[in-house]
Each structure stands twice: as structure tokens, then as C-alpha cells.
Image (cartoon, rainbow, N blue to C red; front, top):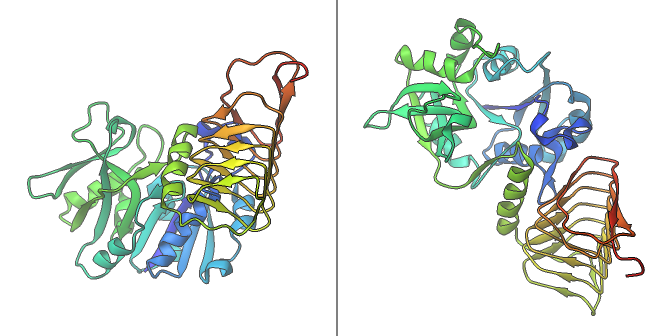
Length: 360
């Protein structure tokens, strides 16, 4: 089997962060989401992976490279515009050939990996296997309707009146018959070749399309709130390690990961949390469900349930920062007037002066 990762979207729901960075490279628990997808496919025994890229192709290529760090081979497949998931399959035919393949959206995080799914598909007679999960707002997703035996009857993309609460989670397995489908369907009202239409084409022609209902958690990291939720869930699954320096005046609980070169000085860290490489905490409090990436500084400040990207500084803040997503090379510091409340989504290279008590 081969792997196909879709990594070409613009990530408009994560603006302003994605004005300057690919959404798939924003880290969850200090690891880019795209890296987690690559590792999930590799751990399922697949070593030949194609990545469909768009406007952020050069950034993704710099970050991922040829795949040597995962002992796999990466092929990049340029997509001229985000013309739909089925279009991404269509332009990948030369890379995929006649092989079975798994397609994975590059901004999704799923509990438990995909190894059992790949093994099931590889040993089956299925022409396709799609992963579904129950969601609260199915009108925001592609939705499947199943019959009493669990077979797919109908697929609809973002329906106004959903036929069920079973959403497609962005993981699909196909054999070569999918190319018949993507070449047969027409663009939707959105001007895209929809993967739901391609799968429906297979269903209508009695190909064996199997539905797998995922019972664990799954997050589409398309919005800041989704990123924070995914970060919290992944942090709970980490095996904590202390590789950096923690002085004897600090309190770091057993659910905290401190990466190599990090320094924690006269600070308190409550897990689950992760402190990145070469990051310094000085007279700071870091609360649960917080990820601070590499080469950051948090000094005389408190932060909880947040994500801080690399090379950022938070200094001399006299009110706790919570539920925030802070970009790269950001500087957050105190200004002279009293604060009320702080909640941020800050893009890369931001500088934010906060209002605070003079002399405090």
C-alpha cells in the first residue's frame, strides 16, 4: 500500500497564524500535526507516501524533506488550487498507480492510529473503506447514511438536513477503482470534485465500500478551539520525561515533559504539559494542557491551556493567559495600565503590549 496526505489547504479558519505558515505545521503537543499524520501512516507499515501541496509547498518541503527522518520516501504532488479531495486523488494517479492506498487529511488528529484499519483493508475484499465517527454538528462535514446492516446507502457533503450524525473523518482507503470514480464525477456547486461524490459513485455501482465507525476521539484542527482541544487530548497520552534542567526551587509534577535544553527556574508547571527544547521558564506558572514550543521564554508570567509556538516571549504579565494560541516570534509584555482579561490568537512576529499596574 501507499499513503496519500492532503496538505494543500489555505487554513483560513486559523488566520492570522496561517497567513505566514502552513496550518499542517502548527504543532500539537510540540509536534506538527502533519508529522503526526506521517508517523501514523508509517506505523501502519507504509513507507511510500505522497503529499499533495499547494501555496505552502516550499514551507512543507523544508519541514518534511524527502522523509529520511522517518525512514520513508516522500513524493510531493503539486495541486494548482484547492479543487476538492477527489481532485487531489485524480492528480495523484501517476504516483499511486494500481496500488491500494490510504488517504489522510494532513490537519486531522485521531486517537489510536490507523494500523488496525490498514491491516483490515489489506486482508479484505473491500474496494474502499471509509472512517466515520459520531459528531454533534454533522452539517459541517461529509455525512454517511447506513442501512440496518451497516452498509453505506448515501453520502452527502455538508448537508443542510443531515441523514445521520456519522461524519467522514478524513481517512479513506481505496483500490484503483477510485480513479474510475474521480474521472466520472462532475464538480459540485462549490466548484470542487467532492470525495463524497466519488465514493457515492462506487456505492451506486455496487463496489464493496465498507464503513468503519471510529469510537475514539478525532479532531479536525481547523480552528483555534480545535487546536487547543487536540493539544489537550494528545498531552494526556504522552509519556512524560524530564530531559532538561529543573532547579530545586521549582515544582514540576509527574505529568510534565521537559525537553532537552529547557530550563525551569523558580517556577511551577502542572501537567499534562510540555516544555520545548531550549525554552526557559523563570518565576513562571504553566498550568495544565499547555504546550510551549522550542526557544521560548516565559518570565514573571502565568499561562494555562494554551499553545505557544517557537521563539516567542511572554514577560512580566500580571494576569494569567488562558485558552490562547500564540504564534512564532511573538513578544507579549506588560504596558502601564491595569488589565482586565487576556485571550489571544496571535500571528507570527506579533508584538503585544498589555495594560498593567505601574510599578507592579
